[in-house]
Length: 219
Ligand SMILES: [Fe+2]
Image (tube, rainbow, N blue to C red; front, side):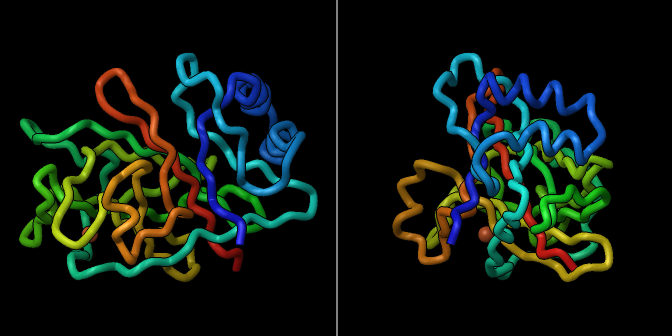
């Protein structure tokens, strides 16, 4: 099974992305796909000057992307969340975190309007099961891109650090999954943890920037 890897944007890829952004989507994908097939991108070797841009998947001519793995929803999901890209609230404790990326199909096409619903623990590892604190949904833009502004979730007993997510292409089945953090000591001891769902994390000026690409089975 190919591991999903969401990687830092190498300077060369950044230049290719700048070119691709000026092209229609199919040409943009072609411009970005000059090398390895699948979603794995080059690992950054120059983190100091890595721009904080979500890498787009790179697709070969005949390689499908591997679908994002499903995971348990756990006991703390609340339906009917508010639509919002930022879960931050005044005086909310925690390290600021921006998660950004794309929603793609396994056929390597962006999915505009894909639904994403996020929920997570607060800085102290507690869920709000009465209201909607640190819960919210949004829809990917016309390029399939999303951005979530939140905090790094705290730890709670029995689990490693994670963010819950639902992703759904319009009129398609729901994917329930979880996003993880690299280099977490508790990852190894968490039986639910899966390295294929680890976000790529960079340090940002005022917190952390995470990248992840959701890949949904094509209908
Ligand atoms: Fe959880």
